[in-house]
Image 1: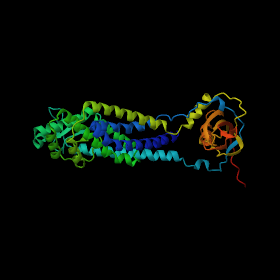
Image 2: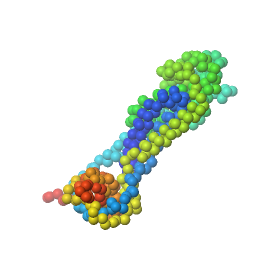
Image 3: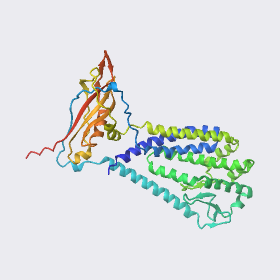
Image 4: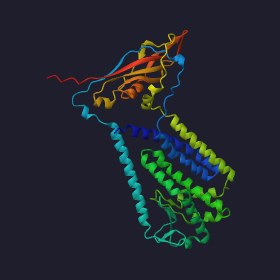
Length: 419
């Protein structure tokens, strides 16, 4: 099984996730001030969606061709032969497999580390007892939190009401119930999974604290929307429950001292009107859709996919003596011999149809013939895109023109060592 598709997805995904995080970090504060904290928090959905889009097939190269550009001329034969020294074939290092194994090891280690943090935190809570409100209480619970992703539950200290008072305790409990209603622990599970898959991306780990802050601000906004006259009491609850909970990667803890100042400052701002929030939700949907499409559309085309479909999409040949390509001057980089064909000692031939631009660069590549079908197509197209030609001349001006280039792959047995 080839590791190249996996590595390609990791590279594409890392670039897409990095761009998505950078975009969210730039827009989160303006979105919060314009449309509210809940809209700003929703913008983080762009990050996992960007990684999912990176797994989609790459876009194909545009195949729409004008009939007047179909003049074909015979090209020079390009031979891609390979010689293998005795005893070296088995010693070749499979770098894609090694890189894939390193990624998998890192992902597993990160997952184990997060799981260990979760187990240590849950074990530190001690024995929990359910109460009449549907929450769980324990003598060793340091503060209110939501624990668990698939079956989340609220855990509270045994003396929760006596610590805060009835009014503040009710607001804190409403905050934790807002986490449950919004499914924030499941969102945190997705965040942890992203950090495991993209463990080599430092920006993703750095942005986690900003994501958590936006999550808490969104829950604060949800509580104040139901209790608009309780801002002072809610601020008092924040000051009385100053808790930083390390080791809770999936759950939702009440707050951390680092975000306390920003959360209290947000309490002074009035909640945007429902119309503004709906407008912000539409803006976020447009942003997510446009960015996701851009992440897909602007990736380099998949040469393998083009090779598989080019012969079906190639237009019929036509004679056009006025348009041609001067083949006396050209730069050819021989294509690499595919590893699979090298292992099976397979030879073959690919006939390419290359669209040469007026500047001599290659604008498009199609496959006219391929024997064996699909074996050497991708390697030929990849090499052809780097070639340069003298463009066709028409009425004294360089114009686009087509040229046919046969690419022949010949496997040559290794030379026997002299006795």
